[in-house]
Length: 101
Image: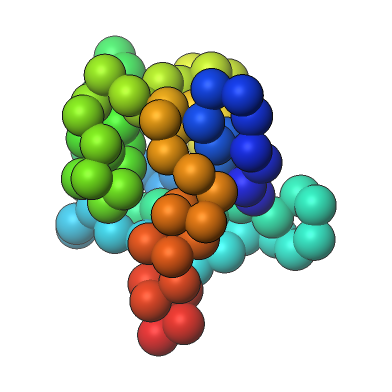
């Protein structure tokens, strides 16, 4: 789900478009193929869900939107985002309270 790179951290996400609100919905899969499941309050039309995901991830990790880049999965539910300028420990710390509830 998380991997540290020289540019920041990559985050594997499983999007669920068309939700009532955008929120972390848990973890999809397990082990090396696990993805952060995020319910997205936008349809998967014309990149709207991707835009909402970028805004949500930027807010979640206290990053500018320009520091969140979709690097794969533009048209799929399974996506990988690069979070620039953040450490793996900071991402884990931010996600921990959301995944433990």
